[in-house]
Length: 407
Image (tube, rainbow, N blue to C red):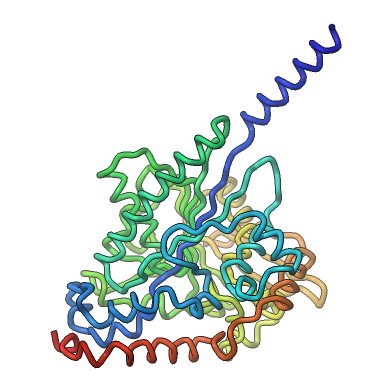
């Protein structure tokens, strides 16, 4: 009798302890603008920020939204919330995915992300959130409302499924996908659903006057904005914002002092211009350009988008911030010798630095899986051929809509 009572107490305490310690982390990846260069066919309404579904550019983007060939290289899947479930990740890791799934960049990149996370009692869930991807601030605000409602519903669903656990959202936004995340503060002010974001990571997000102030919203427990001085696309959007300018850092527009907001310049072997816009969310984009090709570290992280490496560098950044809370930092990836690749996070004044262990043993299995199993559709894996696909889509719808070019 005493033995049974003892076992019951142990079981009860173990259950209570797990319930108290465990959390559910929902990691959600949000792509950026799609086919932005085609906005030129509706240049006037885009510049006047009056773009609507009537215009040719909008029609082209929407007509090509479900073309799965665009899923091959970028972390993007269908529109709305799409979960990449555990069985899919396990098959990707075992290299047994069917070809139509293994060719999708989102599955490959998120599997790598999961492989690099240091596991604990946390339950990890992975999703992509797809939006129209239009180059228009009104579209971003509206699509952010969809994201807001989706997150509220997902939070409630996960809390019902795991009532003893805390639900945490880790959001990753590439390019203008980051502005969807920032606009969540606007919608929280209206909806008041008590949505909380544990961590928001922005990659090459154009920092604009419409959204930057929302980084101060209390719903965001931590915001990390990653940029590269060589990313010209980040600051190229001067037409979809009333200020006609896009900045690299949140601190360029907002006083972030005493807030858990960190602007991070990412560098390769000290070169702060080495990373391009596509390297953040696209597979196999490190060898585009002379400055990038000469960086030895890119031979090690080849195929891996920057977002896949986040489980390695986010702890460096947050640990450094905890010890020395500064809003400006540099993340440097470099190859020390043939067998050693390192990451370091340093404060803006370079007084304080944290260095990682050798990351090659961790990233090599990830790179190997992608190299062996990622087989994008023939001739569709680079940006030039994707642009050709977009132009073909444009040609299909142009004859009926010439009036849009001058409206």
